[in-house]
Length: 263
Image (tube, rainbow, N blue to C red; front, side):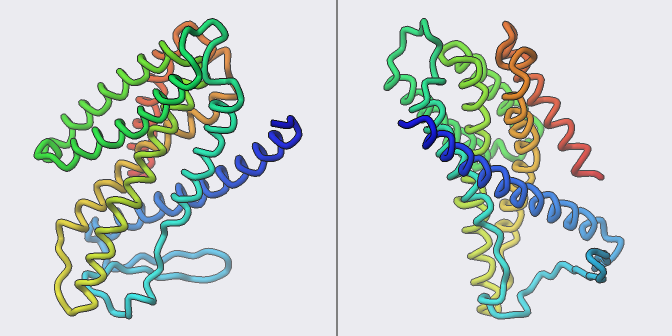
């Protein structure tokens, strides 16, 4: 591919990726904060001021408008993931950054491993949180962390340090986007359909969607750390301890998310 064309494609995709990600993360944390304030039981509405105006937001158990009037938040996740995958393919699968120069793997095998990690990672995560294990939330989260740490170790053994970091970020981003499109949105559609028919929405649907949204608020912080790591190669992916550092960044990100969720 022509170098200038590659640079422009990279720039355009990165702009979309960052901007869409800002919108996605912002609305996710806003609704998390809003739900926390309303769930606390202190009030049935929250008053806010912004841009020279006052806003009041409340949470309802029933739908008071037609389904067509409900505002959805979904395309931020889709454009963030699509642009991220485009960058992954452009830079690592076509750009020569996937494997170390002395790697014994072929490019095709490396690409297969990279894509396989994204698919298998989502399937394992999703099955775990659909299984009875989800009731023991802390223990299942610890299991997920152990599996993620194993993936970090494996990827740092077969890919370049930078590619390993980006694939862990892509794995978390894929899980987040799949949570939105395959678990949260379908549950919301069923809840809206029930409300539109005058029925009481199934509370388990809302609880399941809320849990996946909660997971996304934890995963996004280490994903941003991984994105920033590109600018600090000596301290992160270029280090002899890059796997340990990445695992520590994930833990630090989860701790930061825990604090943010309670702010």
